[in-house]
Image (tube, rainbow, N blue to C red):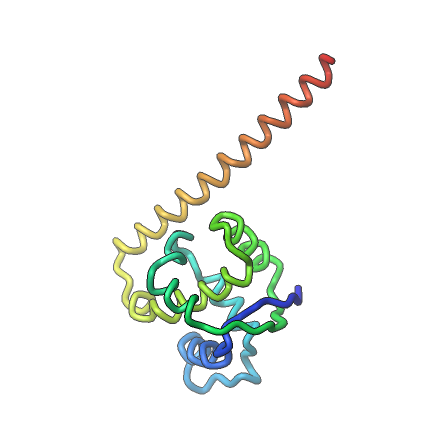
Amino acid sequence: MIKSYFVMDNIGDICSELRNRFYGNNASPKDYKESFVINHSVESFISSPQRLMSKDIETKEKSSKKMPKSINLRSSCSERVSLLAKTLNISESEVIRRILYYTVLNEDQNADKTSDMKLSEIKDQMTFLRSQVEQQLQIIDQILVKLNDSEEG
C-alpha cells in the first residue's frame, strides 16, 4: 500500500546504511529501494514497543527535520505500523521514523545478541501481544453485553 508519511530528511542516508547492513556493501538502491529497506526494518523489529520511546530515539526524533515521502508498505507492515501507532499513541509516520532510528542505533545489539537478550525480547513481545488480546477480549465482552441487552429489551 503506497502512502505518504512524514520521514526524516536524511532518509536516504539512513536507508543506505541499513541497506548495506542488511544486504551487504554491494547492495544498490536500484536492487533494494528505500521502501524495501523500510519494510525489512519494520518486519525485523521484534522488541517491546516501549523501546521505541527511549531517550536516544527521542533525541533523534526531536532534532530531525521531517518531509513527506511516499512509501510502499506491505500490508503486514502497514498493519504492524498501525498497531504500534495505536499502542504508543503516536502517528504512523513517527513509528516508522522511530523503528528506523532504533535499527540504526542497535547495530551492535543486532549483530551480537545473547540468548538472554533474545529471551527478554520474546518475553516483551509476548507481554505486548497478551495486552492486545486482553483489549480485544474486553471489546468482545462489551459487544456481547450490548447484544444481550438488545435481545432482552
